[in-house]
Image 1 (cartoon, rainbow, N blue to C red):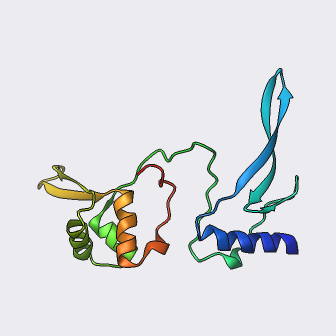
Image 2: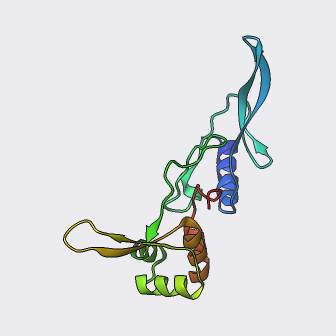
Length: 153
């Protein structure tokens, strides 16, 4: 990895923590009688890799557990995830009862239904991504919650 790519990786790691994104720049060309967008280079903020230069990311600048996803324009996740109190409690390192109290106290969105599978039926409450993000802010764990569904909630 070249020094230029290390610098690009370091700047990208710092900016992605603030919500930045890589983008592909390109140009329009004529092919088969129509206009076609041809990708040319990777960009991140004011830094751009030259055409044909590989995008290499050095993991030493990224926080442990970082996940990178390539998302085309207009893509949305096929399934919108909802979480239980215990799952959110595990993510935010809080007791499920504390999560339930915060949801109730702040009148956050939730979905409750009865699960009648098995011998006994049970009441299930699920929390949407917007509620999980708000809980992360309330508990001081907002830096742990990232998602591709920000536009969906």
